[in-house]
Length: 401
Ligand code: ADP
Image (cartoon, rainbow, N blue to C red; front, side, top):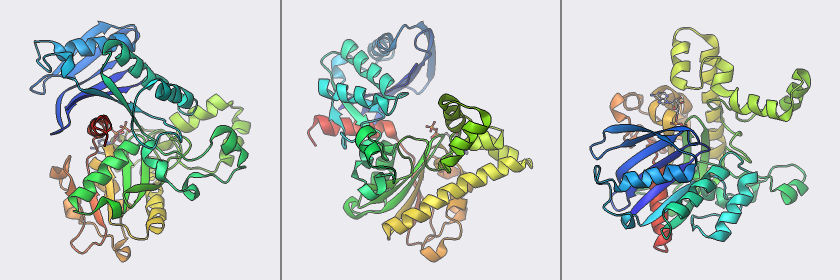
């Protein structure tokens, strides 16, 4: 099956055309700055990068450019648009309603609209993508794959906050969790790799990128996760503070005379690695500064590691038996130091890393077992592939699986 995977941001449209049988990416691309002088970048059949400029008024026009490109005889991605069997959309928030991917119809659209209140920066552009596809590719089935869906299996003790219950009733304030597509993908891959039955597979998945979250997976299902009502909670991130004492919010607002929008900016955009180090949100730059003797940069990295270790510890207790600790996404896949520090000194718990393998440059992009032979818990590097997971989910939903 050929699935067009779409991920729309407020002024961007990312896509991949994937054959689900073998995971082959026929082409992929990105349009940025939609609404003005847009930049279109895509990859040709031989992997060569091609860039074009277009004046694009909205997402529908952007999708029009993508679709024309897909059938352009110069590139031969597809002969006819009818060859595209389905479209899979990344949708960030599915609230409590969606624990699985679904075929998009009017009811699903109005639910995604409803949950825009919970994800104001993400659900509206995701909807623009859906509406654009209805316009440009009418008749092609569309599937919504939600970032929150995988976490809908969490028990109440994981997802409720101990605040007055009325706020859950009134506003649905609870833990939702995010990056579900990635957590699910790496769980499936790890179970396959370790030849374990997913139904009894327990693991801790560490998705560490610009945004990071950690999930406790019990019997193949999400049992707890570090991101909460919003993606601000949890571990230290590029520009987000992660979990802090909520009283800091009121203290700062008073002292600095800040309104809610300003404190939101501070915690979401000006904190984390960037805010503490004063260097960058990119761990590579923070690490370089730390190596040059910058103390705050070194501490920022330590704060990141410590926050991850807190969740690993908590989830070891939650799960009782941990078959695997999995590292994925930009930092998890590339930063040997962070991986090493996250599991350092855990030998007494049956978790022992082979630091030599962990430091090999050649493991980049490869599913690799990083543990010592005797380690009961297998420490794995599993490259994530959210687009492929979305394509697979789309195919499963269309085929009624
Ligand atoms: P996003 O959450 O935006 O999808 P990614 O998963 O692409 O983020 O991760 C981006 C982050 O990964 C960067 O900010 C950087 O800190 C980190 N990163 C990428 N490559 C490396 C590397 N070689 N070494 C250390 N960190 C890296």
